Image 1 (cartoon, one colour):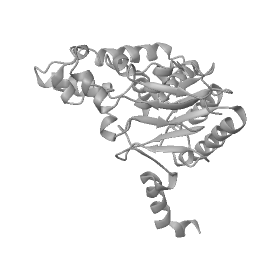
Image 2 (cartoon, one colour; image 1 turned 180 degrees about the vertical axis):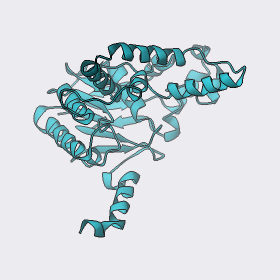
Image 3 (cartoon, helix red, strand yellow; image 1 turned 180 degrees about the horizontal axis):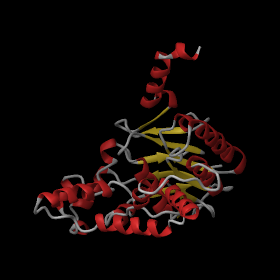
Image 4 (cartoon, rainbow, N blue to C red; image 1 turned 135 degrees about the vertical axis):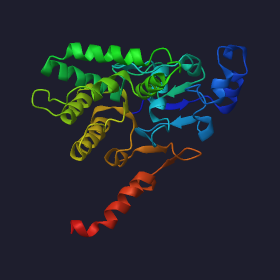
Length: 296
């Protein structure tokens, strides 16, 4: 089943017109030139402005390639349900006004239940599980407060101590609040389930029937065997339960799903490629070829 046919991002001309228009006066031009106008200044340099979707569409690329950004932009434009907040910059709403989308069969909105399921949603779920197991709700709230304190007003450099505080602040800002807290809380099990098993069940519970689902790196916390099981589950969700999936991933098990259309965000211009031509798949192949005798 297919609900979303295509999605158009701002072109390079759109972004330039925005920067030099009266609507962009709130921009600090110096910051913009340093590449701080997120989510502007990402995709025009990749010559990527229109996405054509299949029942399974995958965004592949390294860290910072824009995979999660694409999912968030599409989710916000389509007004999809989400279980976790994301870092929405002051320019996000302006960016979304340039985005356009086309549906199949003249749909004005995506089907009921359509949602974006992110790693932060999984982290929040795991944190809740830990709170249940260990009674650490107060510790969680304290860590959240610590995060917001560290990522608040930028530290001003007046001494060496300020320098250390600024390093801590920048490190915190590179993470979401859920990731920050998850790294600082004990790794415990939920009713006998590991984090990976709990994360797997989180995704399978959230995916229903006849809807569009955007999945942000669902392989996080999953073992190889659970990634393979998740790939089979997702294929069945599309084949038998009328789902359409858009996935940001670099898992070899998800990348090799049958019929998936894969956009390589590491390439310029961004192009659709078969899974076996992707760089990290080649790296896996070379590793196992080098040690092939160990498996015989």
